[in-house]
Each structure stands twice: as C-alpha cells, then as structure tokens.
Image 1 (cartoon, rainbow, N blue to C red):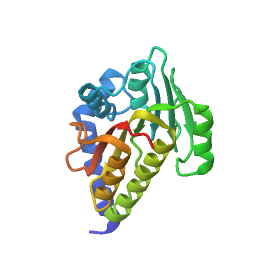
Image 2 (tube, rainbow, N blue to C red):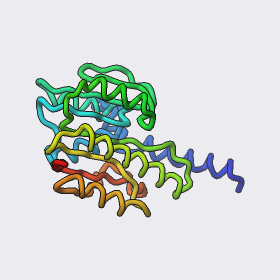
Image 3 (cartoon, one colour):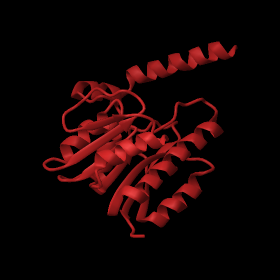
Length: 211
C-alpha cells in the first residue's frame, strides 16, 4: 500500500468515527462549536475551576467551544481573553487575539490586552499540527506546554490555576516536575471525551505558589 493510499484510508476511518462520535452529535444538538467542550465541562464540574468574576486566558481557543462555556461561567464581572493561530468567529464576552503564541509580538499583544491585570486561570488546549511522527509531535506539544507554564509564571496570580493539554511521552516527567515546582497540587485528568487511542491528557495545576 502506498503512503498516499494509507493516508486516504486513515482519513476515511477518522471521518467515519467523527460522524458517528456521540460527543460530536451531542455538541451539534446543543449548539457547541466542537466536541472539545465536554472535556472542559467534565473537569469543571469535578474540580470547580470557573467562577464569576475571574480573569481567564484561553490558549488554543479556536473554534471556541471552551470559550462558549467559560464566558458564561465567569459572569458577572469576569473577563475572558482567547488566543489562537486560526481565525475564530467572534462571540459575546470574549476578547480574541489571532496569532502564534510562540511569537514575542503575539505574546506582547496578549500582555497589552491584560493591561497588568493578574490572571486567575489559564486554559490551554493548544496542540501542534499533527505530523504522525510521534517523537516530533510529542516534542512540539511539550514545547507549547512549557511556553504556557512560562506565561503562568509571569502572569498568573499567586493562588491561580492552570489546565494544560499534554501528550504522555518521554518529556512528560520533566514537565510534570516543573509544574509541581510552580503549583501546590498537580493532578492528571483524562476526560471521557478524550478519545481512548489519543495520547492526550490534561494537567490540572492548582494554587500557584509565590516566588
């Protein structure tokens, strides 16, 4: 079988799974922008992440299902700033910045939007374009997670929380150690809406330590 035909077969299988996925159907029925919302809902219901009045940054936000949910949960009085490399259809209660989080100019835009206001919660569902080369994909998502942690060190208020997507793999232990140094508690969450075969998991870090 040629590489092209293998890719076509994989794509066909994925599309079939996607169409039959109960979370895809439920998201469509309930008006959510993607099935990913059910991952955040499950974690929020279990761990009580979102509250009225919070300042929240959502990294890797497009198409915006996490924003749909979080924007309602932080009202009244809350603020949600979202960022993604891709375009996102505007929605009420969300300030959106389009750009690459890895670029300094985009980070400065995000900092300017915050205007010195400390962040209560950072959400990151960022993932690189998957190449299918496990080592490469693992390294790129871990780099995004490290940049997210760096952002938290600079902008998350003491006592603030982080929820970040990571892939289980060779660099996972090192990242986990770094997150544990920055927060009082760290838990691993694998929501039911995460596909079984996916290596993705989420680190939930609570109460950023001072210093």
